Image (cartoon, rainbow over all chains, first blue to last red; front, side):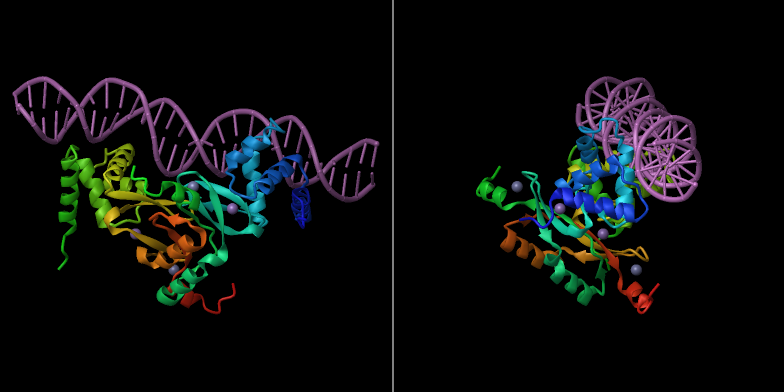
Length: 152
Length: 152
DNA sequence: ACGTTGATGCAACTGACTGGCAAGAGCCAA
DNA sequence: TTGGCTCTTGCCAGTCAGTTGCATCAACGT
Ligand SMILES: [Mn+2]
Ligand SMILES: [Mn+2]
Ligand SMILES: [Zn+2]
Ligand SMILES: [Zn+2]
């Protein structure tokens, strides 16, 4: 069904590392696997915790160094949410995030959803927005429904 | 000309502090003055540096504690930009920011500029965005003009 | 003036992240 | 397969923004 399984995707990213002269290591594979499995929405510490279940001696500094390497190659990018938290993301699956402040759910929002805003900013302010994935906070549909008429 | 001078505005905020049972101190006055003078776009460390020109012994922890107090009273709020940096802002002058990545200029954008996006998110996703001042990055009009045709 | 109590300076501490360094692991050539 | 060059890693110390405990200090109501 899926074009690529997660395993294939991890393998493909390892190939890109190798093609750039980087070495295929277990540490890198493990970090990449976590990012692919959760397809984003994970912090560096989440990744470290997750990876250390399989490789207890893998240090958090290795996670950061791997993330930096992947960022240099344009494979992942760092996203800052409007509440100051930060997550890592596969670049080829770029999108914005709608983060529910009540239940914590994170919904993905296609980049195209902000096209109108971008055009408006360019027309009215001459400001050319860069493709910057945003994390917007608010109430998701479910929580909004269950909060209807709730005054507390 | 102006409805309120900066001095008046500082005085008014000090009044609100006093009205909430907080004490009128030089530290608080100095911190508030910096925020009012720069009307936002200052980091906690900017404030500390600025304030210490007049009160060299004023500690950065006092700045943070003052900011927290002002936040509790709804007088200032913290804004996280999409690059992870954070600034403090008067709540009564809420707006978004267009931050130029080339020249560093920060342009203010009325909250109303995102009304259409908010309606779209509510209609299409059932997501109710909270009033969250954003810091969007890109190229300002000036820099875009001076970069035109520049391939490097 | 005075005493209560909140505010401050100082310093130690946290959490996210970075950097140096020596030991270890890929990779490639022989 | 082996050897060795070089990249990568673990460990650990350091940085940076921000927080916290505590003794001292200073508002402010009386
Ligand atoms: Mn995502
Ligand atoms: Mn502003
Ligand atoms: Zn929700
Ligand atoms: Zn500019």
